[in-house]
Length: 283
Length: 262
Image 1 (cartoon, rainbow over the protein chains, first blue to last red):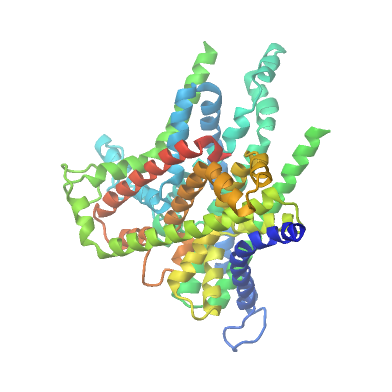
Image 2: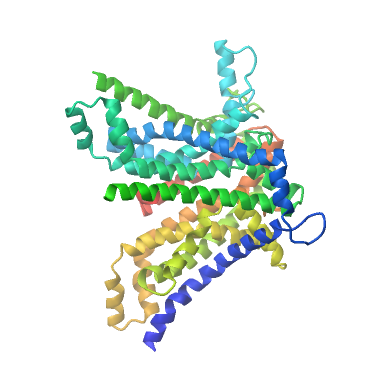
C-alpha cells in the first residue's frame, strides 16, 4: 500500500500543474491550426497565410526589420552593460556593489510601460533633452528623438540593459584576478589581456545575456508602440494589429508562429554555441 | 597612474549607463509633483494635485482592482501548484521527471506575443470562459516557472532527513509536510509569492490580447499615455515604483537578492 502510494504520489503532485500547462499546449496547437486556415475561402487547410507573408514585401519587412533592431540593440547593450558588470564585480566596494545591485533590481522590477513613458519625458518634443539643448543654444528647433527608429532603439536598449548586466555579473564575479596579473607580469598589454583572457572567460554570461536581450528586443511590443508611435515596423505590433484590430486571426497566427520559430532558432543556436565553448574548456 | 585613469574612465562609463537607466524613473517622480498641466521639462511649481487627480480617473480604479485580483489569484494558484511540482521533482525519482521539468519551464520560452494570441485562441475554444478567467490562467502560466524555480532551490537546500525523521516518529506524510516542510520553506515561499505578484502585476504584452474592456493597471496607464498628456500617469508611476521598492526590500529580506538573480 505504502509502496503503491510512493509510486503514484509524484504523478498526483504534478497533475494540476500539467493541467495548467495543457492549456498553453492547447492554445499553441490551435495557433498552428488557425495559421493554416484560408481566410477568404472558408475553412480549408492551405498555406495561403504563409504564402502571403513570404510574398508581400511589407510583411517581410516586419520580420527583417525586427531582427535588425534586435541585433543592433543587443550589441549596444552588450557594449554598455559590460563596463557596469565589470565595475560592480571587480572595482566597487561590497557596499557600493549592493547599492548598484539593488537599484538594478529596482529598475528590473519596475513597470516596463512606465519606464518607456519615462523615456518619452526625456526624448519628447518638450522633453528634457530638447529643453536642455534649447537652453544651451545648440539646437535650432526641437530634435526629433522619438516616433522614429532612434527612439525605438533607445527604448529597446534601456529595456534590455538590466537583463544584460545581471547576466554578465555572474561570470565577471568568477574571474580570477591572478590570471590578469600573470598576463601583465608576462608583458601582455592591458587590451590584450582583456581580449585573450577576460573576454573568453565571460563567454557563458555573454551568451546568456545575448539570448535574453535578443529575444526581448525581437518580441518587443510596448517600445515600438510608445516610442515608435506605431510607425516603426516590428513584428509584435503587426501580430497584435492583425489579431485584435483587424480580426484577421489566420494571418496573425501564421506571423506569431514564424516569430515563435525564429525565437526557438535563436535559443537553440546560442545553446549549441555555449555547449561547444564548454566542451573546448573541459578538454 | 595610467591604471588610476583607466579605473576612472570605467567608473564614469558605469555611472553613465546607470544614470541612463535611472533617469526615466527619476524624471517621472520629478514631474509627478508638477503644478502645471503639461509633461514638459522642467516642472513648474510643486503640488500634489496629480495625485489627487488619480481618484478622478475611473479606468485607474478599475485597473487597480483587476490587477490586484489577478496578481493575488494567479500567485495563490501557482504557489500551490509550484509546491506540489517542486515536492515531486525534488523528493521523488519517477518516470517522466525530466519531461515534467521541461514542461513546467516551457512558458519561459514562449514569446509574450505568441503566448497572448495562443491563450486568446484557447479561450475561444473553451467557450464558457470569461476574459477574466482566461487572464487568470494566462498569469498562472507566466508566473509558474519562476515560482517553481525558487521553491525547488529552497527545497534542495533543505535536509530531507527532517521529514523522514518526522515520519519515522509516526507522522503521516501530510502531517510531516504541514508541520515540518512548510514552516521550513516559509520565507522562501513568501519571496516566491512576492516575485510572482510583481511579475503578474507588471505583465503587459500577453495581457493586452485578453483584456477586452476591463483593463489591468498597466494597460489603463498605457491607454492614458496614448490619449492624454498630463502628469497623472507620473503620479501613478511614482506610487507603483514605491510598491516596487517595497517588493525589492521584502525579497531581499526573505530570499536575498543574490539568489533571485542567479
